[in-house]
Length: 74
Image (tube, rainbow, N blue to C red; front, side, top):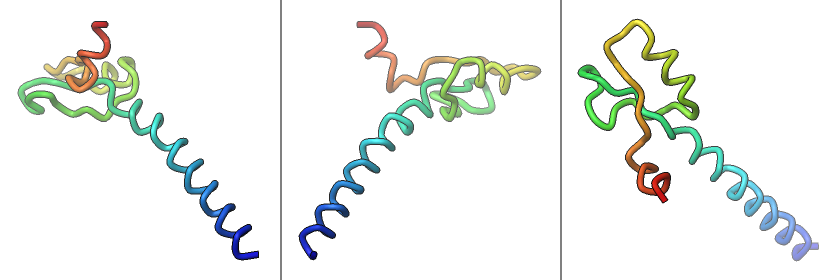
């Protein structure tokens, strides 16, 4: 019984870690940049559309998070 419980716990931990990684990585693809935020800026946007909506009406713009820029060029 102890082995079964440990196996189930191990599987659930691995599934949780595997599922959380892509979501966390996609959360910060775009950065709101401008005088107020500096560089790299407020990098909490998963899509350019979200970032542009936040930049609307301000002097800010949206850019690719520098952490992902080299990977995108290849």
